[in-house]
Image (tube, rainbow, N blue to C red; front, side):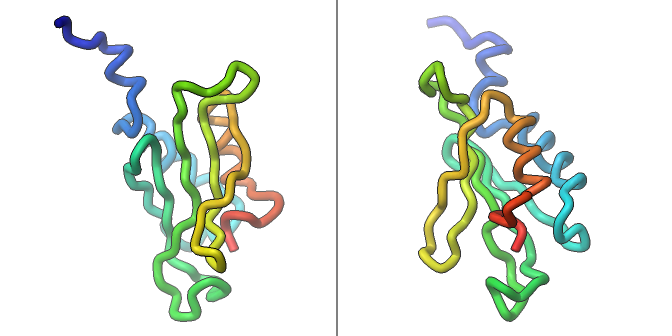
Length: 120
């Protein structure tokens, strides 16, 4: 049995490189710039949480889930491998927001949040 190549090793998710890319991208978000979100490894991807300063979700201002980024290596050719989910706090479940070919595209939607699905 041979060892995986460096390319194969970096393609697995979660990994430290993408974790840092996501954390860096969150600095450019347009909403709730006065809180500091955190990025965590999750099975097959990354989970983002943040203090709830708006008090819309948690009146006490506690830490809430914001988004989930999932990498699917087995994605269909007509969809991207990066799936982005927003947290539905009422239902207590992740809501699918779309698939993207590049991580940068998913992060752009997350950071601009034109429909206020993530940063409430």
